[in-house]
Length: 101
Image (tube, rainbow, N blue to C red; front, side):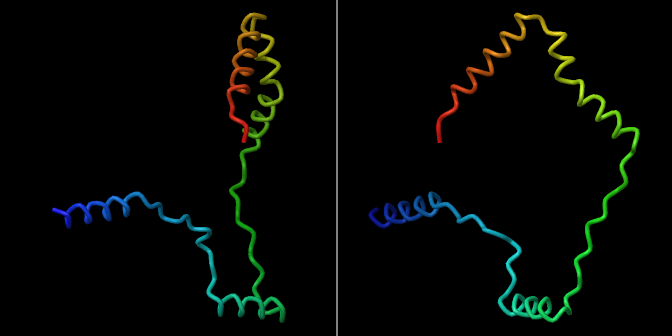
């Protein structure tokens, strides 16, 4: 019975531990890093190409700008004073509820 209890404790400890977070998945091996440094120093390294972007639809961009400019003020104009007051109260409660870090 004592063996089963010890095994259960070990099993519980394994499940309680947290795996360490990976700091990065882009680590280079030491030799690759050394070669990269030498290539940059001697000018042999290939220049990285900027990522290609799809062209944006100009009409959609203009519509987005137009809506973004007038959004907040148009919404505020439609709200009654009581609605604005309630929104302000809710925002203040949310700010005060936050725990200081």
